[in-house]
Image 1 (cartoon, rainbow over the protein chains, first blue to last red):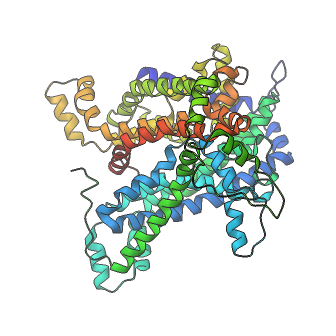
Image 2 (spheres, rainbow over the protein chains, first blue to last red):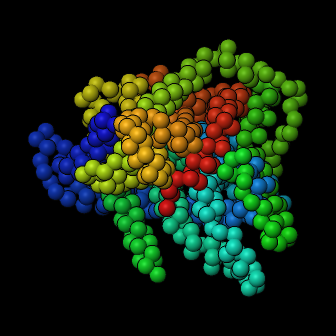
Image 3 (tube, one colour):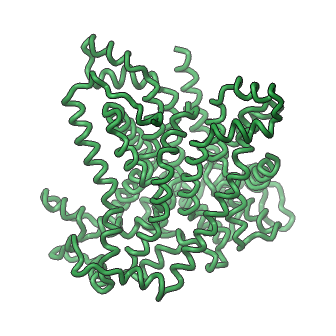
Length: 271
Length: 295
């Protein structure tokens, strides 16, 4: 246990606390204390704002998508009982597959002359330049959802197994529809898990970077330039103060998100 | 019989809904599998055919389509041969990735269960604060602690060495959280029974806690493999000056652009260990997460 604690302190807590100090000094030789000046500077930076907006928007597309998809799929898996095992195994598979290995197929599918555009053409829609325009968001989001939906399904499924069958039997006798049962019985009963799935999905989607980096590189189309790009690029320019300041703004946002959702959960718990 | 396969048949579900679920799940599964299947299929195409095919990409003429290839002109292992024998750089990167992954998993196996055990079964001052800290760190992206971490690595002389990647991963907060959430569900009576019979905390740990935690340890192992095998952010920063230490995850993209003809075999080989490991641990993942306290 001790080496573990030591490691946590050295590589996680230490840098975390050190970073707070870092973000408040000016990075010169005497390292003067400048308070929140760095924060003001970074928040006025256009590129930072662009990254922040994109990260927020991308996460607000991905998280609900993953949340709804995984809830519906988990319900379906439950209704199949034992027969669902092969599906469960398949749905989680992408989580283990490295992103880089998939890229080549992804680029092929979304090529200007590729299958997706062919399907669009079948319906009489014009081809879309997926990989080099603001539509780059579509392949990025799809890759992210494709890879991560399985993990949410597993957590949801675990919670669903704990809902007693009798409740559904009873509801069915009362003539409740499948939709009613899902929203009136299942969802309230598994609310804490639903909360966890949503928070994890949101926070993780907020951290989306790999997918964009692989498809678009360090300076991708403006529509997918994330906060992480901003930080990495500032870092390669050795502007540590800006990186850390941006990072802490990021951290504060994530923790506020978490706090708000957590408080929400506390309130609902009292019903 | 495992916990999962005992999942009951639900007699009441209406037939139509069951049918619909089947249909939608089959469609979803096909969509999920398709990219993986294509990768493996295309890896058996002759190198020339693939090179030619991939040259058709990024063609912006509105008259031209890319063909959808379904079967190779001749099944060929040439792509694999070329990767394994003719281009040592691929194998080199593959081995790098393997070194990182294996060391991280072994190290985690030594450290994380004990840490999770102490966070779940002991009461000591500051335990909950510590756990809250772990939870918080788990949610934050790597970049938050990036700059100070680099300073620490530099002070320790670890920049541009493999240790800069391995050491922080050994105490990765997510896995501490995962294993701890499972261990809190172990009934206290069981641990106390162990202690009463004269087994110390250490023996309780090895003879009671570890065997019970087998599913979550398997799950953590598989997930951690996936994580390390797919590492991008950390090497980009910590290894920025030493390209020959880079793992495959960072370099594969560049490699497959240069050598488009063998890219699919490269991708297939790269996916394969992950898939094998997944097949081995899949029950553990499902069971481990199902039994742990994820609420």
